Amino acid sequence: MSDYRGRFAPTPSGPLHFGSLVAALASFLDARRAGGEWRLRIEDIDPPRCPAGAADTILRQLEAFGLGWDGPVSWQHDRDAAYGAALERLEAAGLAYPCSCSRKQWREHAVYPGWCRHGVCDLTRPVAWRLRSDLGPRPVVWPDRLFGEQRFDPAALGDVVLKRKDGLWAYQLAVVVDDADQGISDVVRGVDLLDNTPWQRQLQQALGYPEPRYLHLPLILGDDGQKLSKQNLAPALPEADDAVRPLLHTALAALDQAPPESMATAPVAEQLQWGIAHWDVARLRAAPHRQTDATTP
Image 1 (cartoon, rainbow, N blue to C red):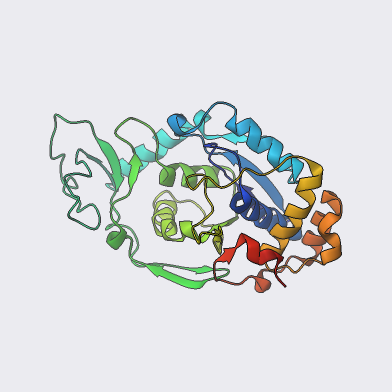
Image 2 (cartoon, one colour; image 1 turned 60 degrees about the vertical axis):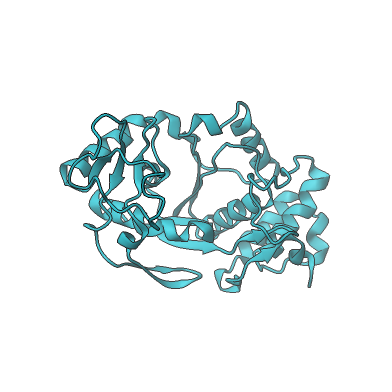
């Protein structure tokens, strides 16, 4: 095995859809082509958004498409102590602060203006915890493997929430702590998360964590031109083999890997073997893809 360790980290707010499949498949192929590990993490830190049984459905869907992971499944609901320890370190360094402000109060501003940076504005209200984005490295610069050099000023993006007022952990802190603890070397995910990366790299540097390489993938759009998502009621992935085979072929095509048309009915294992052998990031186009375009030569 190489030093490469990738991961797929879905939120179990519903079943996987075609856009999820493309992201999972790209991450899987990238890891396997490198001779590395591919881990699975269920990002269930927001229980109200995670209906019962959704995570089990995701596991079955991944198995149906032959996307087998290494090691045990990691669950964010087990990680409270790790997130708490990281927040304490950030607070001690002056990089995290409690904030009582509501979105309604700062709605006329493009981003949260940092009113509580030097003390909580309203001690009678519950507080969230925010990152002092103005104190970390600025600008944040990194090379994306598809989109090239990226340059963001995190302060222009605002002080992101690390822990919510309801006591639930926020995505930005959780994903950084988990990637570090799991030794993730490479993150492959959708370009809709590209502008989350500056905060995450600030957190990685503040906590002394390694900084993974990033490959952000073009969005997959539905026929209506909208991003395929659970919120947009994208259809769930099938689990029956006769439906899985052609859809896996379509996903390989959506990743610009140009699988032979004759492979559309090939067994899942054979398609994945071909995909691993031929995986080439240089083939990826940066423009958004429609799901139906993947079947067009």
